[in-house]
Image 1 (tube, rainbow, N blue to C red):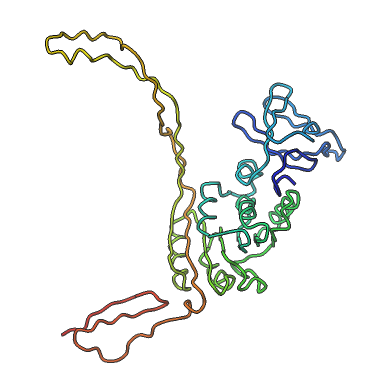
Image 2: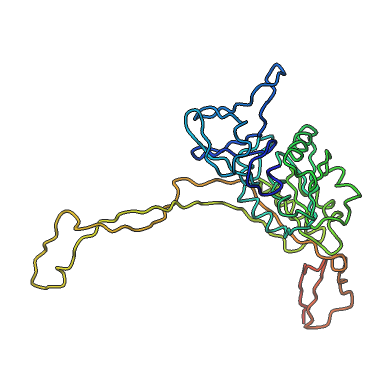
Length: 341
């Protein structure tokens, strides 16, 4: 159960990350596995640098160097970030740059109750669990029954099933269920039509308010979601795009010429064709290519109930000369007009 707590040594049943020359592989530490015929055989993991007998990993310290038949690698304890890079893809997943912003914008802390719609491959779910445990809980939904079954098995294998409840459900049509009404601190939607899920999010968020976030690849989805959020009383609606750019830091030698002769007016120009010396500098260079568009994050705040339901009625009395009339709906100023003199 290497996902549950930090450990020093590898035990049977753990999931480890094998690091080989900037490549990562997730391995389940089982001495034996079933072959295609259903027979139990020794678990030997094949890599570009040769075979690894998985049995030999039991009892080894995390971070240790392990020998392969044609080289060596390191075994690392899994984290949500490493799991996102090695998990079997059942859907397009959300990666660390977007995940970090989602966790920040949802204001999650240990003990929070968060609802996720669109479990997919479980990349974000692992990060949500780490943020809210040990007293919090993640309720995650997916409309695809097979994906729900596989994700449920992974949570059990990783020792995380105490902190997550996964259900097969079409939340856009059925909502999150009456048992979650008023229970959630935050709601995250990764769905094709997130605007249809906004009313269900309102029902699920606690009476004292909470946060909402949706992930959408298309700007048209964002526009409809923002309109639905405003319609249902959300405030501070913001949309952002997270693009990561990694700079490469290196040491570079710069040629230096001796220009001391310029201090003397009568001196000629004894500048040699080659530089007199070199000086080393630490420099950062931009990558030749950058990661493209992944998706838009739309975040908003649902205020407490007593503010959410409070509206200011439109003035119906005759307007006197010079007065300004403001019509307010859901605490948002919609129109301002000055009376004619």
